[in-house]
Amino acid sequence: MLNTLSLVAVGGAIGASLRYLSGVSIVRLVGQTEFPVAIMTVNILGSFLMGVFVVAAAHRGLTHLSPLVMTGMLGGFTTFSTFSLETVTLIERGQIGSAMLYITLSVVLSVAGLALGLFVARSVFA
View (cartoon, rainbow, N blue to C red):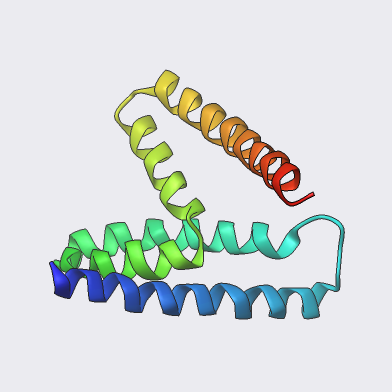
């Protein structure tokens, strides 16, 4: 358990650092925009890498690296990759309705949760 936790922690540090460096690099490349291009790009890249790793790990017997790569690195890079994997897994199982519900609830309730957090924090710290 401690070894697995260590792998997740190391991977998370690497992933978060890569997210920061990617964001800075993308802003330098395309310039500062009102649309969150850097975050969107990181989310798409992280989702792509999650898909590649899931298949590669299954075919190469590397699933033991999942705590390091999937939970740690890609989770630290973007939690959106895990969201994407869960969505595609539901679709592949034929649970289209559940996938659409998961997408809708995740996006709407996450944005609502953030808005509520802002409201509460602003009320407390005002």
